[in-house]
Length: 323
Image 1 (cartoon, rainbow, N blue to C red):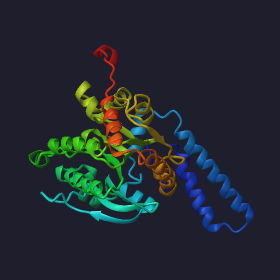
Image 2: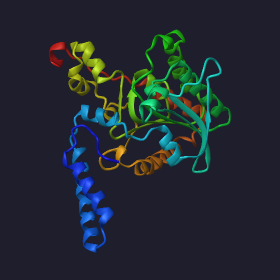
Image 3: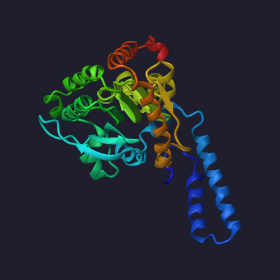
Image 4: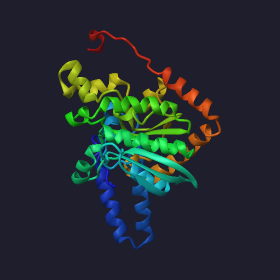
């Protein structure tokens, strides 16, 4: 995959092009050695890119259109996936995918946001912004998993819940709130992973779990930087300033206790190598599942409840201090 990240050094695409050209022509050992040197140089540049990134740089990486989505992880990590459709009240919502699968041979449930790769898919998936029926479908599947004692894996990647009038008419806020309450009560293990954007209640509605992981370049926030800047300063162009104040990066979230584990990404970001990202994530998912599945159901629910009750640290600042 080519590097498309904003702010990337200009010579990355040049090096990739050289590697492609040489690979198609290489016949001698000297040419093969040159290809290997270029690959090492490319990896070094990508690693340097991820050092001292600003919060807004992390936001751009979290939104990168080539990052793996839920169905990519399903294909690369799980087996025997069987999708569940519909909320049995109104309709199916393609912005959230649910289904039974096997994880290292163990039956599990997968729930996750799904964005599209091209414009047609994005429109079909509503850009990963669920409506009430999406959250109700997710909870219906979770209740089914609880009935058969199956662990639940959720994958978060959404700008937020869909804010349209039709979603509001069908009870968007109620659907999110109901999910929060019911997920807190589920007796089976719940492993949450924020893989891209974790946007507000739209993310949290499938984000109540025993372990909350976040990918290195993913974000989790009550509002987008652009939305925050528009509210505070009436200027969405100040998004970078808002991103700094929101403390939405994986590193900030770990510091304040909102997430449990930061999962490293391949050189250059998850979008550069889906297979490697899935391999890394697989190990962390297994570790998290082993960590909680031996607990008694009552103890698991108690710990989950306490975990989310203690969240909510904040710091008060004057408008002058914010600038």
